[in-house]
Image (cartoon, rainbow, N blue to C red; front, side, top):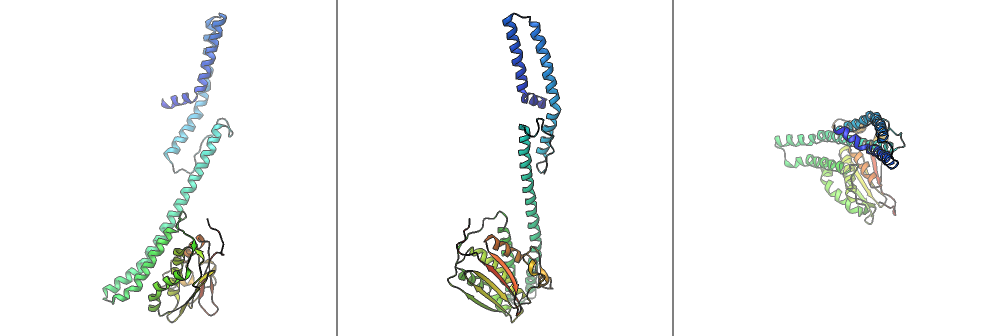
Length: 332
């Protein structure tokens, strides 16, 4: 009953027009002294016409209302199958339908993006949980064997690195605004990273050579440069054999990390920054690579307007270069 009343209220203009016409007939009849039966007869005939008109429009109106009710009951629907507008695509109902279709498509796109983000997050943390179990298991074994607590340091450092990478992944989300570009004292950032990694270089019996321009101040975000450098140093320590060397160079144009490890397979070079791609080195026994570190570095570099590239050295090992944007580049 409520639906019928709502339909009649929407068609109030038709009923109002019928009432005005009946009143006009009655007025003319009264002014000219015509018989009242004519007015009643005309009103009855017009009422039948109005009823037929309302009855013809009722099924289509009801179908559209029911379709909208079903859509309201299922807000995750990507498409609302509505009947064709009664007045065609250029009427008011057609315009409303186009607006509804546009909003529905936008909501569907947002839902797809949200699902993709959730899937990516689950995939990442599934790999992350597998990675972090390795140093945790190593620390447990060391504790059970009564080892020197100093032996726990490398595994603890690795665990902290995995936690920092997870936090970086979350901060690098599509809607992230965690970016502050400004002229940055690059030498200070690099030296801070070097001090943090010094113990790992000693334990790995690696030599670190650093040459930096103390006056270099590229426009970048120091926090994300530090994040990228941490990931690059982690790979260098992981793949460079004992007795090898890691070389750092920092200028206003670029930051480079070179090692004397096995280098990168030529077939892997075009893909090492892809998400989840581990390459030949990452698939070696004991490498424990997830293929996410360099992906996060490339993503962070892109956010800062930088370029991250990799190449092999003729004498062995590889070089990863973070190139800063040219001076004077404007950022929003």
